[in-house]
Length: 219
Length: 295
Image 1 (cartoon, rainbow over the protein chains, first blue to last red):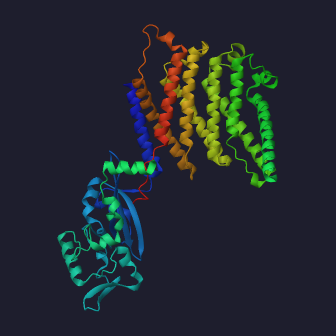
Image 2: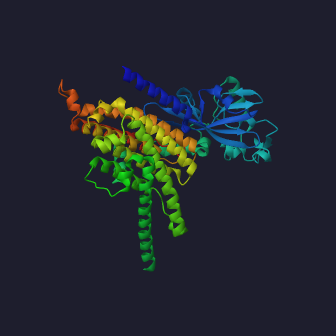
Image 3: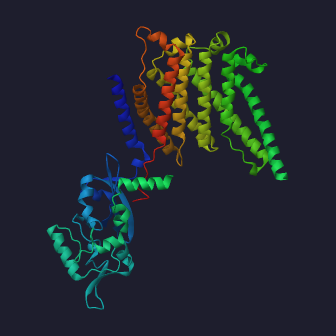
């Protein structure tokens, strides 16, 4: 009993020290749910786009999410956070969407296509008619790289897109675009963030294949 | 041909210089062990006192192990490399002797070299002393390599390794069933084999904890500390597992006598050594990968 007590104390000591001191535990933030976003940045206008998720561990899983954080003046960074199982699984259908937005203190957690935050804001751009006569959103020159960061490619949202997005926002429902351009099934998301959709990540490896590959590589 | 011959001459000269450094060590040894002055400085008869021979020549092996950590860079010139070897050789000798002095003060707190080796010719004492010398030499070699010619880092690592070795030595009393002081008085070789296996295992384990890349000394020391505690957690599992796989039985009523037999010491020593080697594998040779290349 005494030895068991000493061993238990050693385990506690190791876990405590590793949690406090280990470099691998430092520098990565834990995001339990949506409410944690506000602590990640103090920028007045910011959007968090979920671009990848990853799971590690054998018996006890650790969940990671990768966000593209875009704030004013083209400040863009890819941020990796550790997240809870519930939050990660809840957002698996929201890949490529903006999970969190803040606009002058007003926060929104409804998953929306990336860039919704900037639509109809004259500071960032304005509505212009294209050659086909359709009114599209165009960013100002100082934000000309935003479509690339947002994963739009050649896509430019029209007024219909904006109106539908606002309606969904008011209803508190996720929006994937008029033609499902965004999200896990979205063509634009698949093109902009291909890593999440790569064949290697998707395929389930059979034990036989795994063993054959192992012997090929090692012998 | 001339270049090859030149390199051969350099090696011959360096061999001579290393012998000169070991000769110097012989005299420095006396500073820490004044009582061995007669034995060290006169012509030695190895057959006269095997305990003393083992005690002294284990240190010669040790100094050889430490010297092997010093790299000679001939591209910067023969004399500069000789000077580099002299400086680091002297530092190595000083650290080695100081480490041995401190460790033996802890391990042989109740025993004296003159009594045990010179008067009683205690082979158990000399065998344990030999194991200590080899382990300290190995660990000094490890920290000298990790210090990468930085005296400050060498000092920090050396102090750190001494603290860990100090704790490890105290750990022996907790995991061995043998009574160190009583069996030492009885010149028991069982004790020496058991302790030998333990301290060599501990040396391998501690050395492997230090053997890792380091860019920042604080992070490095934290990693070593965490690995050392991890080793403390894993080692008892192997010890328990090996005891279950190879069950042993001592005769009831004869337990104490049988523990004094060499066989029991060999069994304990092998158990500790195997446990430590396997622990070092699990602590240091396991790759969990990183999320960054894939994520």
